[in-house]
Length: 406
Image 1 (cartoon, rainbow, N blue to C red):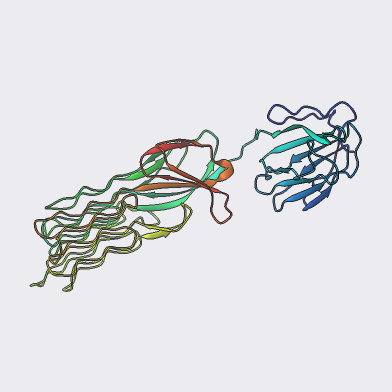
Image 2 (cartoon, rainbow, N blue to C red; image 1 turned 90 degrees about the vertical axis):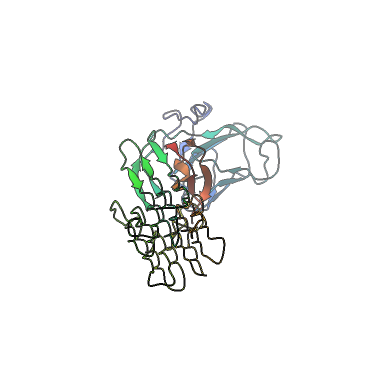
């Protein structure tokens, strides 16, 4: 037996009450098709999960006729409902046909007369009082390290690179975002390591990515440092270990080793988030290890490359993909180039009496369904809605520390 609005009143945003007392509304089965022919006196739950729906209003109507339409699955924002008014007016006009595209909307129309035709007496979104847990994808990249100083210095390691999905977010969950800085440039000794980036909150699994390991200097006593990805070695030292501390999957790779048979000397490149840094050779410093491409922020971006190693011969190392700094060489200025900011990439090692490249600052990216984005943030992240393959994802790119409350 069909219910009537007098038996089961409903509200939309605290406004829509029971249907007008002049005759009740008989609720129909859920509509899932692309078309619907409406009959006066009926209420229609319309499910647009997979398609839009065009509703044909009655070709004739009497004063006081009423019809109600409601968003059954809260999807009208994705697939709208259009009312084909036919030969009768709608709010006093012959066209255009009205379109309803608000999530959770309910529309109650009444026929007034030939002059105004159908008029909505209530139109609003119904509050979602039973929000469900949802998932957030994240990318956490720590600050990259600076390349080493003195001559033939190793490239800085990339900041640790971690990505996964955190499940079961509920309304009110607060997430604290920390974005690590890149290591500062040096003119001698080991490069400064980068700082950690993290994602944490009450009831959540804390995710922390380690800063990249600083590039090594020339001698044995100044090896490449360990970190998210390890620093490249000078000609005589050891390379820094990546994935330190250990995570699964790995957050980065080892630095490359140096070259020291003479008369040419060259340093290894810093480890990257997808591969080990390249070794130095008679032809020049080792390239930084490559980074990883990710589309979590809406389009593909490669981040987390290692810095190139320095050399005292022509042909300094090229940058690893992912925004890494190149190594200095004697045929140019001798300075290492810096890692690109907010990619967590390593800076290049330098040549004698010059400066290494600083590490690139890290970044934290969150991705969630548009419908679940609360808009409550601190730290001014870059927010973009309508992303992803289905154009239904919101991304938050934190280039500095901040927070998000679901």
